[in-house]
Image 1 (tube, rainbow over the protein chains, first blue to last red):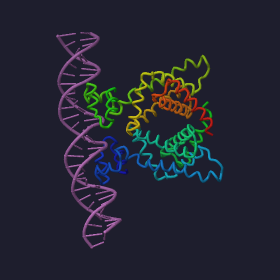
Image 2 (cartoon, chains in turn blue, cyan, brown, red; image 1 turned 90 degrees about the vertical axis):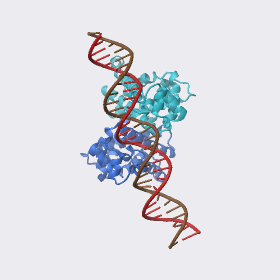
Image 3 (cartoon, rainbow over the protein chains, first blue to last red; image 1 turned 90 degrees about the horizontal axis):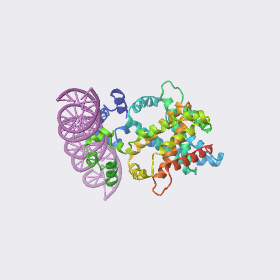
Image 4 (cartoon, protein in one colour; image 1 turned 30 degrees about the vertical axis):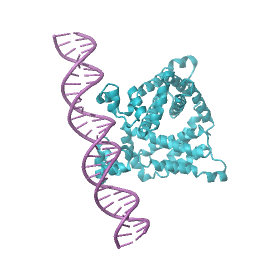
Length: 184
Length: 184
DNA sequence: CAAAGTGATGTGACTTGGTACCGTCACCGT
DNA sequence: ACGGTGACGGTACCAAGTCACATCACTTTG
């Protein structure tokens, strides 16, 4: 993954061949494809981790319910986002910074990103279903939360920003919720 | 496009080569790629038409403003959806019906679909911006509308359904709006 | 302790999506 | 009759992605 990101930023995404990536990593093309479904996937690995993080956080709420009374869907989403964003420590910020322009410049990568986002939303939606939240409330809450995450990530990836991704996400979610009330 | 959809349903998406599609259409591989960016695109052509339809409908509202007073963002979105869904006449329903399972079975196609959806949302968002709707209101209204369209399309593609896509979309949008109010 | 199993990697051949370049042909305006 | 334009065919080529087979380290088992 490191080798790939380096080469992509050095010489561009489409002018880098999988063979080059594998060479720099000290591997072969075949081995590369054993770890990544395709060339794009090397930039999006870790998605499974993220979906699990979100789902587990929501599933873990049950214990709290009994103690502090019912947890609303948006509160559950907030908890899930806290769990997810906590893993984005400050030393990984530059990865996001370098990743963004590469994705922005290539449609095939935007497609993968769009699907990954949809899968995250789906994971949160399913987890909310497991808590008994009905449709379409569950997916609306999920969409709002995931959107807050992505909006916040965009700010976080900016080197000028100094806040935690957790803080940014929380604030963004609050702003979105406020804007919703004014929708109609 | 017809040749492609036929072959995909007959023998599966990945077992059909571009050469076969071109052959059945009486063309060559080269000509195929002159019309479609890649193999997937043959199933998603018309996206440009849809984005233009949505954007134009919203841009056309200005004339109405003066007459009947201000139009809210969601009303503008509703008008855009009416313009879009009006083009899905009943004789095109079976295309949607056959398209759905093909896309559902292939990740690469879901990616393209996810990006197309994002692009539609973006088009609506931009059009709302042109009307002076600020962020994040504009994109929230856009997301809600596009989601209503896709949810409704899913019902419409079901052969059992007998309603117009316009009707289904309108009703879905109303339901989503109602669920929003109950979000928190 | 040897044999067999397991999992990660390498090797090379192959298919196919996708691009580049060039030639041909029809149509159109002058 | 002439040159321009646009759509198409043909060929060669590159790189993504697959597959079958071999190797090697490590572990499990009799």
